[in-house]
Amino acid sequence: MRLVIVSGRSGSGKTISLHVLEDLGFYCIDNLPVDILPVVIDKLAEDHPRIAVSIDARNLPQDVNLLKDVISELRRPDWDSDIIYLDADHKSLLRRFSETRRRHPLSNDHVSLQEAIEQERELLSPLASMADLTVDTSQLSHHQLCSIIRDRVAREHSNRLQLLIQSFGFKNGMPADADFIFDVRCLPNPYWEPHLRSLSGEDSEVAKYLQNYPEVEQMVEDIIRFLDNWIPRFEADNRSYLTVGIGCTGGQHRSVYITKQLVSRAQTLKMNVQVRHRDLQKTS
Figure 1 (cartoon, rainbow, N blue to C red):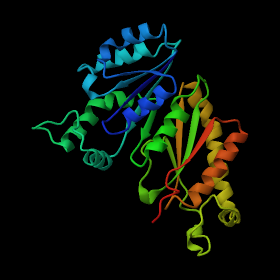
Figure 2: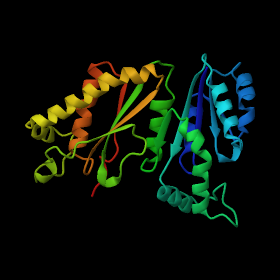
Figure 3: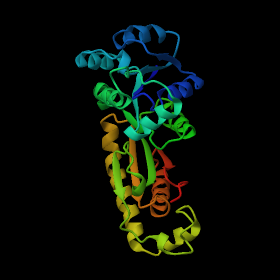
Figure 4: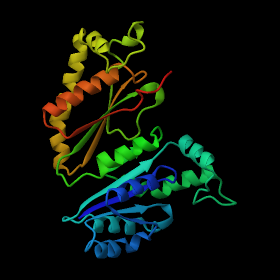
């Protein structure tokens, strides 16, 4: 049986994620008290091989130990279970509630929106620490979040670790959901070549420029060697997901090229790899 537990702060994308899972054939449960989930899911599992359940701050038990006991009970050896935690930065959550004019579930006449967002973070922190995969939705569009849920979460059972390598620009902030971040700003920058400035690391002209520098190839080799050495250790520790961020200044040239090279090498090594260029479409 495949079980996906979706949690995260209000406004981070839980509803979108449940809709995607429902479209993919998951039986979805929302807003049930956590302490009755094992009994409900155990009964549903008789007829439904794929179940998704949403947990938010409103249905958490006050006793953290009870939450841990419930999660432990749901991680049965014969079930393929994952906890997916969605989050976004404070500014993004404020903007989303302002745009939609929705009321935060924890806000009231005495608790402001900002206070409610912070309270929710504290209430959900124990569950966040148990997550198999954390997704930072701050800079994700609706379409991008749907793609991540389809590609990373709604997979068939596999004992192989799922590796995501994503490029990004430091000027737009570091990805909060990355397990490892490699800074490639020390490499030669095509941005300072006028004929390359408007291009990206996906263009052959930029690739030829970077290939002229031995340190670029050395960077690629060092990172892929690190991943090749340590991914088996993560798999042995029952990790399902690993996210690696490759960052340059703007997320257009160096990080995109390095990410492309890493994905190609990872595929050659038979790694279960996916790619994302977080900032490639952004302009200065």
